[in-house]
Length: 67
Image (cartoon, rainbow, N blue to C red):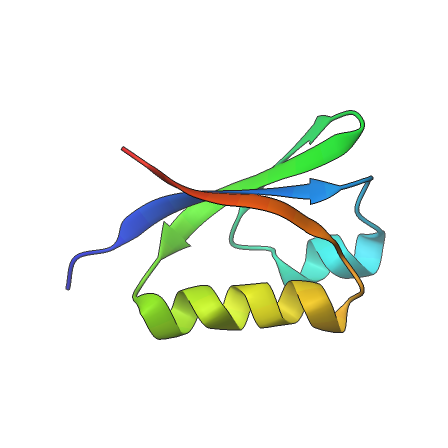
């Protein structure tokens, strides 16, 4: 299986609850945004991550594959 690394930029800072939901990702504060990056297994996994952001009320600014 080939995984891709993705960078997710979201508005604001993450709460402890949100950080716990994305424990497999590296989280970097870049005010006024937060950057998360990590391995994404496939398109279904990618959509699941985005759905998790929505469920937590987090606004996604951008999603980019990292070469």
